[in-house]
Length: 246
Image (cartoon, rainbow, N blue to C red):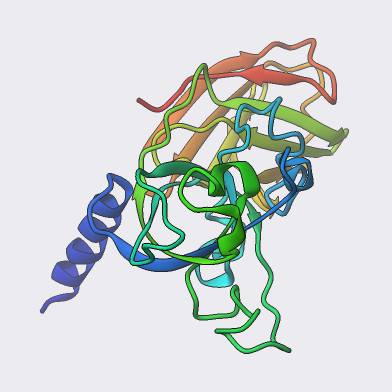
């Protein structure tokens, strides 16, 4: 197969995955308590999952799925399978908001659930109980990538200080997981941002007093531009809404 052919196969596989084709076997546990308060914060940087619109339909991903944080914001449909004692009917759709770290001191089948190369979802307790009984602890599941459905536009929260603009990007529809960001001030051209951690993206350009535009690209290669979504009188700590993937 030619190099072009291999690229097309890989690309089409990625696109079909995002749009929900093909179930993959994994396991699921839960954390965070009955009110999911223990799921707040996390390795994606989303902070309060309620105010950011994710609620309790969230999960921490194992190393094999987390992709060093690039999977933050991706959405998965999950159903409990092959366990008539503990599984409940139906499926859930969750957003990746955290990292489930490996525990190399324990075997993969006895506590090291998130060890590589396992595909594992550590769900918030409330959403786990939609597909399995609480007493199960851990259940076999099948999952697939699905498009993220969001209300309103992509949100840009500007933190940091002058010459260090740290922008948290949340509420992303479509593929959900942001893989590239560019920023443009009203007195600058487009400049690529670097990912600092989770979904916090960094620019070291002085942008104070300028209206800001953002160009966001997700894992499926789709790009959307939010022109002048941040007014010139912005301040650090504020959140602004832009365009949205459909």
